Image (cartoon, rainbow, N blue to C red; front, side):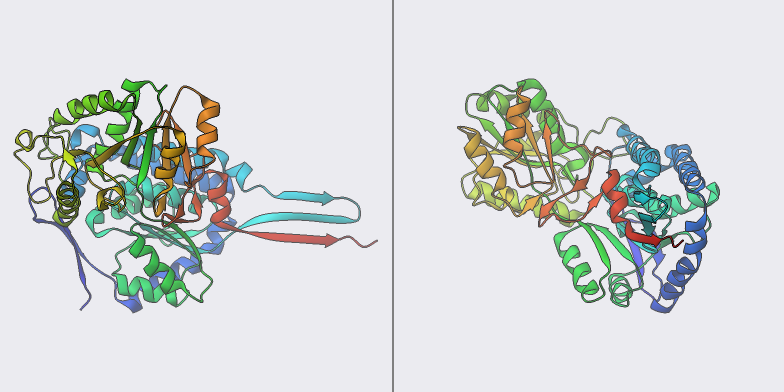
Length: 460
């Protein structure tokens, strides 16, 4: 008897959905069907693959009214925010638009003597292991370009969002993508690792924890399987003395608290020039104090529960440790009587430093520490004092200054006057414990294909 994978709803702790995981032999057969279908799929015209993928995307859009409350039940995001279709469609559409150019041959010579060129060839079978926090958008980052490039795809979604993979498979199959070309699979960790270790896949893309990334690397050791890993984050924001204060507060605090802080590139620590520090903190406290924590199915709720109670308990522990070490908690608990279990009140901390876990370890919850800084050099030093490097947000009116600061930050993306956003035209990547590889943009296509060179000598 195989393992049963359960989604426990953060709304009330009940089992919302459960599915049986595939036994290893059944999983092997699923991979085999994907492999047998891949060459024929890759042989289809690129325009046809693009059309089918985008038709599937549109079908997901038509399901949105059902998907939004489904997501609230599965991972707790309030229905008032309307789901993820905007970003889902934006990312898939951009990758469709650039596919012809991104996958085009690189022609070195085409003369009477030689034809020399480089082509992009699909890897083969791609496994996408997607997370629960933005389950549609994170999945489509790889699924759309992988299919468009000619790969067959297996999607293993997080247990917290079991229905997402089923929705995507249903949509793509309705669109006309063969069932063997895109498959939703329910796998436990042991079976996933065993398949990777057996070189079942030609590329694996994983979005999740650092520990999960290490497990994927360990499973793939010696197989030479290509890996794309987006792991942890502790993204900083830096507010310079010339920043637009209101815009900085609104965006950075939203970046720290939206989705109950469960964002890959959410803001987890903020450094503010000392001249603006008091005003920034005052405005931030006013914003957060006005949030409404509650049932995500209630349209008045602005902050839903965290996906699991244990995630909330981790943030509670980080916050309590910081306060015991001298930090000041500025949000009044009396404003959030619903706090408990998976429901976690938001918190802003001052008098923090980097000896505290809340400023060093990933929180992935609605808490943020704010520190004053004297100049750019101190801010850069603090931003780099981290094991992670996904994004960094710099607030200034001076573009040249932002570029100078950005050149010194160890990160994958530098934002100026923006935060917590993924631009599909730019490579989504990170450094240090945030992982390796890159998704979206032209580089995303390069990572989902391999270069193949042709050196053709023409004899008289």
